Length: 358
Image (tube, rainbow, N blue to C red; front, side, top):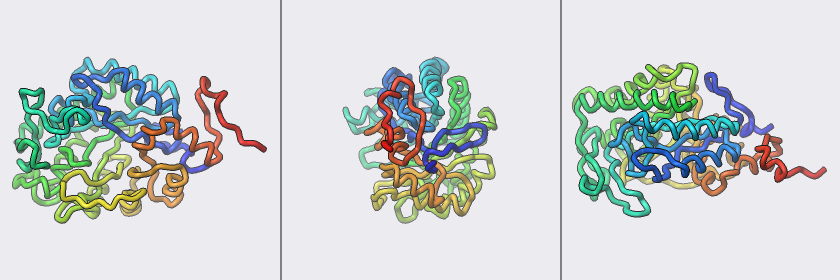
């Protein structure tokens, strides 16, 4: 059997294969509530055979959302539909996870295909917050630098959202600390100009993330996996870099984090990203090698041979796929056949399963 389709156990959760549906915003929620779009979107990837399906960046508070169309878990009423989705995923042999997030200064946007700009309050938007009052884009509103009370609220919101995720039945939580969102805004010296205990030296800039992990762990079952997504580099001079990511990953491992989902970029318009297939794999490989923690590789991974090679080379333990799984929800079933693996198909689709001719 290929490595791609071999099972992997993380804590007490076993994934049937190494394919992970990466969190992908759908901008289709109302007041944070999931709906049938999310049921079909996530459910079809379970039918398609992915081992782990992670729901999109889910706001831990209304102001934590990237856009007005983002999912949320800030009130109990949002749990019911999430539970329906989670149950369907589990009934079809996959594991359900959720990415908990706070967008910080990159919040308060409209639906992207309708209007690419931030919304003012009279348009249904809200004040944005960050580590400092640095803006991301010249057209953005100036964020409010969080005071200690605001930081405490962020941590409490992550904890409360975790409790709701447990009630919904999720088996994996991923804390979003990448792509220029709030946790990343504290990590990077480009966006963090603070002079208190949350700014300046490395140990201060990682403090919010480390304390958020602690807050989540206070309620998250110790036997269930906890992931953290990071941007391994800002791809910009003077920004967060791979060396710091390795140091952070080692500390996260000590705290009991199980997987570093290794992405990059998103913090500054000055970033220079050399896009090519698998352009971020080297970061997952370096963190895995130096720290000895499980990593997920993500970024322009589009076929089964590429994914298998990443695993065979020991560069990562999981393959996170995004756009390819938007194009092809049943990619895992097709990939298994091409790699010569005999995987279980849904009974309803069994008659369409390809057979190798002798």
